[in-house]
Amino acid sequence: MEKLISELEKKIEETEKKLKCAQMQPGNLVDLEECARLEKQLDELLQKQEAYWFIRSRVSEVRDGDRNTKYFHHKSSQRKQRNTIEGLYDENGEWQTKDELVEDIITKYYEQLFTSDSPREESCEEVLRCVDKVISHETNAELPRPFSREEIHITYCSETNASVQSNGT
Image (cartoon, rainbow, N blue to C red; front, side, top):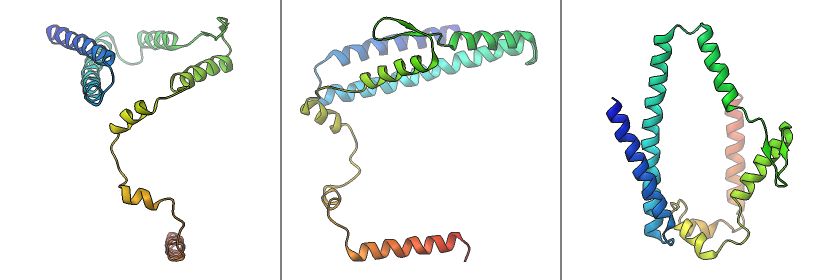
């Protein structure tokens, strides 16, 4: 079993290296597809690793005693302490421990991470090429037009029928 997990960890490391190399390449459609493929492969490998360690931890818990011992309470307390964020440094380099300020720091971090000051049009187009098109050009062209009387009538009638049916009358 140890050999299998060792091989899995090697595969994860190799895939991470390949992904980093692919991400360093100038962006074109082929590179983006390769990155997506490697990310999916890495996700699958990491899920396998996580499942292995989850099962292994449960086996040791069962071996070490039943679920009502102070051993498990201690393990749970340790996990909670390890997962607790005591504080974070703000943009001025000051340590903040108040929950509201820590929450603000985290929110600002992710807002900044997922925002671009000046996205290039070609970058947006490259990304959009990887998104599946769900709406046809014809349907998309029809969306901005005003509703017809007939469409409003049909919608109103179907809403009225639906409310009558849901009331059971």
